[in-house]
Amino acid sequence: MNGSILPWLASALVLSGALFCLLGAIGVLRLPDCYSRMHAASKAGALGAVMVLGGVAAASSGEVALEALFALLVLLATAPLAAHAVSRAANRAGIRPIVGPLGNVMDAEHAARGEDASRTDEAAPSEGKRTQVGQGGEAPGSGLAGDGVGPTPR
Image: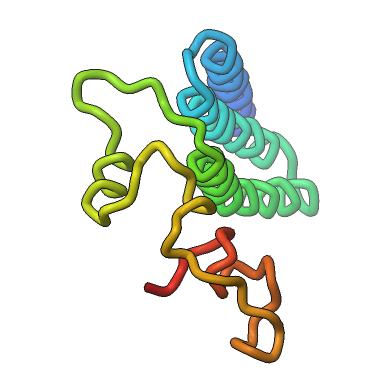
């Protein structure tokens, strides 16, 4: 017996990563709304890709393993952020999730602030006017001046 476990570990990681990617793809096809689909794609897909990249790093040596580990770290850092940004944009665009008996947390937060939950953030009357460059220091569309893109100061 050779005694090297790295080829077995690499094979197991690549195979299980492919299965997680398959589960994520099935979730994208089967789940009811965009939020659930995005959750399946970002969580299962990212975990599957991380496992495949880990398998590539275990199977190779030297520079290729380092590149695979770097790609793994980039994927771990960007996948949750991208999913959050897209889901927040969908919520701001007025796309509401299909909710069960517990309700929607975002609607409860809008109600606690006294806003109409059926309206988007851009249509809220308390937004005020946009701040141009020179008035507040931020450009329109920067997400800092009450332009409906980012958090608004209240």
